[in-house]
Length: 96
Image 1 (cartoon, helix red, strand yellow):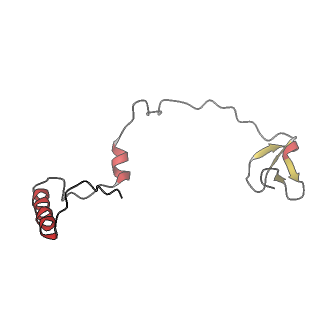
Image 2 (cartoon, rainbow, N blue to C red):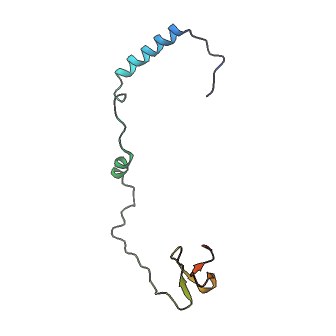
Image 3 (cartoon, rainbow, N blue to C red):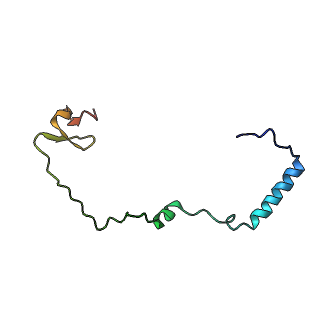
């Protein structure tokens, strides 16, 4: 925390008077008693422009696993046989 050494010093009485004035000012502030709203609820109400993708279709061709591929038993990703690190455990190089 930064300290301003050039600021005039105040005694305890002046500091308590100042804090009372601040409290009185906050009493009339509309947002002082307001409870913070839930961020998740606030995020649901926002709609970003171009975010509606309901009319879009996914056009991806899904191919079955080929003979030269294997499924890693650790990460469950399909890899080429050249990535096979352990043939008994069927684990890829990344997971080995």
